[in-house]
Image 1 (tube, helix red, strand yellow):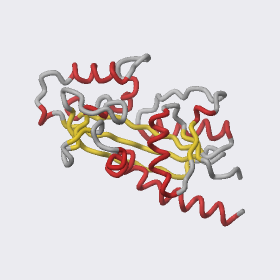
Image 2: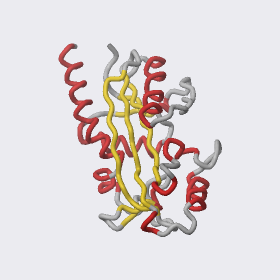
Image 3: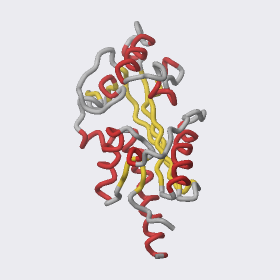
Length: 208
C-alpha cells in the first residue's frame, strides 16, 4: 500500500491547507495540497450533508492518485436562517463567490436582526479515504458564536471577521492562530480525527 504520508488535502484553498497543516504539525503528520496535482479535476460538492461532501472530496482523488486523501467540508450554519448558508457557505453568493460577496449576502439576509438572535455555528466535517477510496476515518466539530454586523480583525478567511466567539469576546478574525487552532470547529474536528490518524499510521508502519 502507498505510504500514509504526506496526506493529501482535497482543497485548493491555500489558507485552509496552511491552517490544517499547522494543526497537524505537533503530531508530525505531514500534509500536501491537492493544488499540487493539476490533473485532479474539480469535485462537485452536490451532496446533501457536510459528511457527504467531505467523502466526495476524498474518495475520487484517493482512487485517482492512489494516495491517502483528506476531504474536509465546513461551513457556517446560522440559526435565524434555518441553517443557511450551511453546505453552500463557500459559494453562497453564486458560482463566482468571494469572501466579500458571501459576507455581503449574509449581512443582507440578517439586516435588522438583533445581535442576540444572530446565533450560529461553524461546522467542520472530515473524511479520510485510503488509496482504494474506502472511508477509514471521520470526525465532526462545531464552534458556536454570534454574527456581527461589521467585520473585526484580518486573520482567517471566509466569514471569520464576523464570527464572534463569546467566551473570548473576539472574532475569528481577531484571534491569534494559536488560540483559533485550539477552539475552532476545524480544531475540534481534528482533535477527534488525530487519534484515528495516529492509530492508522502505527498500524501501517507495523505491517511494513
